[in-house]
Length: 448
Ligand code: NAD
Image (tube, rainbow, N blue to C red; front, side, top):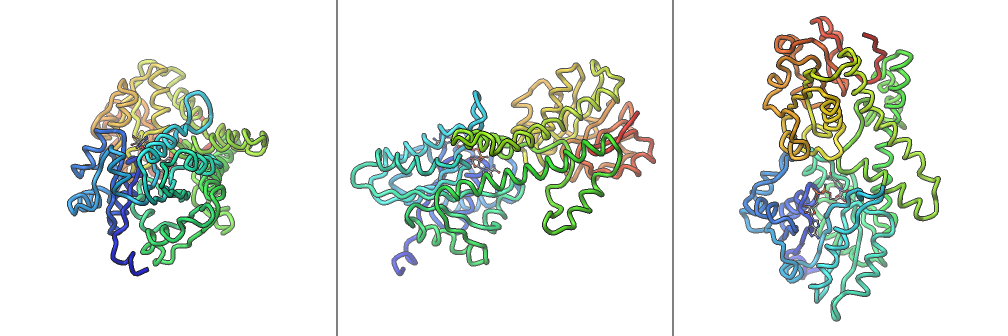
């Protein structure tokens, strides 16, 4: 409408972590007036100063530019947020609860409660966090009960599919946009928010609240299953022989299967896949369908066994005695191009080796600080050479480009013993073996 072409959309993004900081900066980049909201004052101060408190390629530039232009600002004051934004994206965390497999929804509820205390006029609340099916419907009832008299608040769910490491690109040019709506309200505004994204032929899926919530967890459950599927075959080839990469290539040529997410390795981790498959099982069980998502329990178990496999291989390679051995761990993040160590298989393996008595030196291009925040007792160093110095065994656990490019000769000069586990199958094994390395990796039948 004519009015909208002259009025800039006023948006808040509540929860400025990996997802929210990205979404806020990208919304400002699209030209809107954006307020980033968090309860973590240190995070807000950093963001307001244009300093991104985590690693994400391309995002520091967007943050600086949009803070400088004044389109993007940060606050913890919900009164300010309610008065100066009309569309509120909820991007707070939904981690696994400490006492169960379920998602902890207290941050989502807290954010919505804070909004309801202050909103007095028209507003649209748009959930982006990954939540159990039924959450949006419950929040809608909460809104009906608790909203201030005179206010008019609609809710929509717009799940987020961005990948850490590609977050900006995935936000500005996603594979699809999904909005779950309650009786159609919010559609016009969401189309306006995403107009320039949709203009790039991005598919738009308009649906109900439940479907939108389920699309996100279904996607993650499928991806987790795909990874565990190939890792289950890795267990077979580790026992009988065979080449897991060739197997993956061969089945991946079938377009119905596809080659992506078929890399055998140390398994998936991070702040999404593990907790999302657990929360989905828990939610579906709550609904009375106790067997329906049972296979995801297997997916989880296969995934966790990958870590056991690396720990026992390491022990075997070191003569079944880890105490006092020097182990070099290359990579602690759950994947490359991120500093995220949440539920990282690499960090878990490093800690288990340390707990078994090994001296563990760790190097990650971006993840050292976060890992040290969780497990300060590992020996964090600033280069792969330093980590490898005098190592009895080297583990490559995250497939950073720097590790893909490792030179077997160069590394061979600093280690005590040329033994290596390539946890991500990224090194050219024949070339390394030619240089005298004893090495193995996922999917390989291996005997010392
Ligand atoms: P995060 O922990 O990095 O960020 C969450 C932020 O919310 C924190 O900064 C926290 O302080 C803030 N917060 C908590 N309660 C608040 C409140 N009441 N008001 C304001 N701020 C509050 O988490 P994340 O990785 O950004 O994930 C957020 C959500 O997005 C999760 O549901 C996650 O599953 C989903 N998601 C994440 C990704 C990803 O790649 N990280 C991708 C898609 C979806």
